[in-house]
Image (cartoon, rainbow, N blue to C red; front, side, top):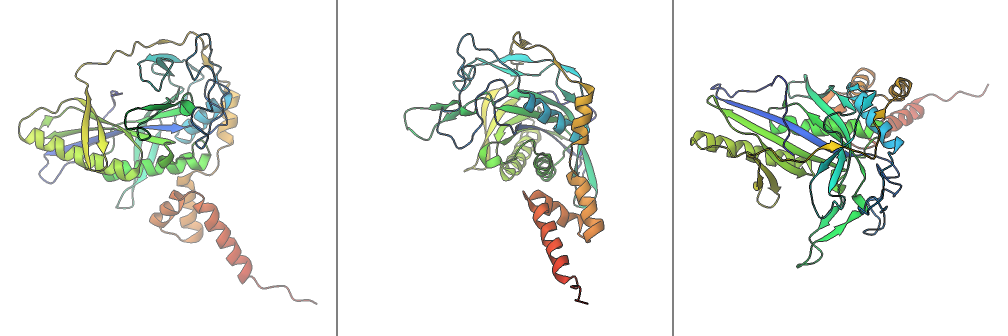
Length: 362
């Protein structure tokens, strides 16, 4: 989906003052829970195909959604960690579109009334400063199934194990100005999600996926924004952005229009490929979800979840610098490794115990 990324725009210019690059990201983070967002079916990345399915996930008539409290709590914790405003009342909607891996024919999401808005995420820059990237919204929704194209040369197969798994969609403002900043943002989000235990952040498993929105202004000419869908590695995010910036710049410099498109990234060629035009707004026929009441959150629950948050990555970075003398760069690398902080502090504690003098017998 190509979504309007509103708000004051931060930009960066080349030495000639001619080029401005604006990048916004949509992160799709699978919620860590034992069951799906609206059904009792188990969540598993290793189960045999089509073995973790409830009637709702298969789109059978008469099946009704039941909201998973755990998924809501995980979404609220993430919003609080991002310093977002959690709304005590929000709504679910149906977003209609058809794919073979979405049997319902619609996705249950929160377009008009997300559970949280605002907030920010700090990313480290080369000069050692921290840049705050604004968060526009965090909404709860369900994932689609998975289309499998590499089993049969003639058939596309569908695995519905992922259908209905809880997702958090985290939409940033277009505050990033380079592929490096976008990659730094994803790394920071990955570290935050792992720290608070709301998503495992494993991009190789599809638990964290990214849609990238890129636009370029060159010589005062503003090109259209293009969206690159379903990037599942930090390296691919960087390569796709670099290619798009170059492509947009070349088109604008030749006085050619930049078509407003949804594109995909081809890993082998290192290029993006057009999937469909976005010249006209897609009519998803949003409507209120008739089978779910409004989501009402008790302020006490929000307060309790805020109090349950662990030390966040930026707080750990400051402590590692002050307590152990690590550089900010070393601390960021350490926190970017899953379990890295726990291992480091266990090693430090072990060294302290080993070097401490033993009490002598009297």
